[in-house]
Image (cartoon, one colour):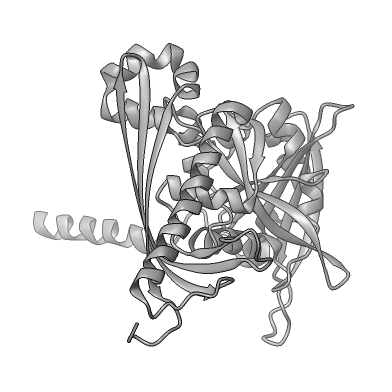
Length: 380
């Protein structure tokens, strides 16, 4: 008898997991948020939110998925989101959000840490969504622009940022959780992808445009796409891209090369208050265009070209380092965080004077270029 009662109880308990999801929402009951733009009205002090929402009402395979935009305002981000819900019958769902665009004015004047914390506290947005800074007048302008490929701007821009990071080295993909960690980590510096509008076939479309530079959580400047490549090279995050350079000032046409493989190793020495940074770079490259009358079948001429290209790259990386020390005035490379991780005792000793130490630091760059494909027969 006791066994029967026990078995009956077990059967009842086993039925509980089969009852379905207690918080299930149907697709027709949700408004799926794919992207968000955050601005702030200077006169009222209210946050202005623009939400991109996927329109799932059309289910035909022949119809491209469309989007609609909802605008709302509030004295906090949370209140603005709640106010946006007042204009919709469905529940706002942020689990598929791919992009958050923050206005440059908001990033400069107030900082972005509270905005990142708000997103991280919310249970729906994923920690891997892209965070970007608008170089236009407002973040809303970017989200309401177009992309060449599809109507869902946020998905296209997110994919463009991720692919540019790997193929052109023109910007840097920074997910939400890494952006937050960069602000909080000792000696680290936050950078975020920059977005602007360009004209394409008489239409304004979105384009990545280098990176935005921060001190703590406030925007302090920008790096162009070209300089972003050398920043990423310093960080050992270059996986592809193209480099053009003028090897001879008398020649008007630039030489261009494609990066096939790149590795960079950074080390440092600290002695008597002087920081020396050593950067060793190795690149495998394809020659695409040449503006000099060289016979690359001849080993000496090929070796000269490799050394000349290496010298140009060394000069450009060194120039960016000096610019960070003098014009930008900030350790954009996160060298302080490297010291903090390697030698916490040394970091505690120099942390209070780190800005001055970085500004007086010396950089030693060793660059080696290997032309794996020069477009000639192997009999050189």
